[in-house]
Image 1 (cartoon, rainbow, N blue to C red):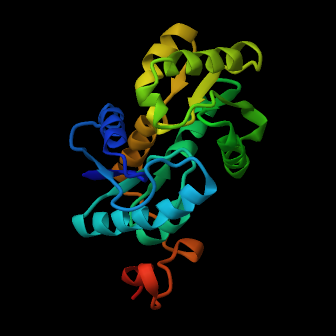
Image 2: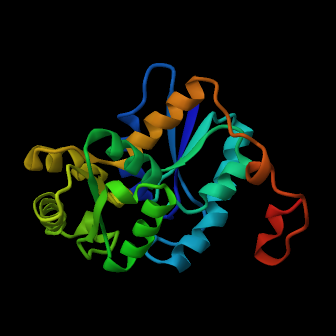
Length: 242
């Protein structure tokens, strides 16, 4: 069974990190393949970035369908393009924010999200509401670091830890959700330091998609998640039409 994990940005080093996290969730009989979008931004830190990442995501979904993928993970905490991807994919599609938040709600009375730039807090809070988890979300905090600085700034782990500790002590969170795929390698150390579960959405989403696909569950294919109507597209998107 093939699970394709899509990095919606074009930074290969980020895909390498995502792959390491996703492989932790692989079980016998499951092949996890992390891929880098061939078009889009180097990192996703705004609504503009999210919007321009979606064509690359959909191209990877289409390629995965040709390759027989059983399901997909979209490895960006904004969950960009999830609804559109579910229209194209036969198998389950899960974004890392939804996976991490739902898992957190099972592990403690309340969780907090710790994300990157302060400007992304609104999108994370919006997703909390979309997934019906407002009653169990204590806070959305930001360490105010650019996504790519997570890999290059030696002070990044300490800043993430400080916000996680504040979420636990000041906000009353029992579980921490890391609000960026680029934080995945910090998960174990943070959990050990804080003494509470710290969730990386990449590994959780990969395990969830593999579990759903292993049970033979597929996308509904009905209503909003029916295949999109066939029609021509023009300009840069001409290859996405019928």
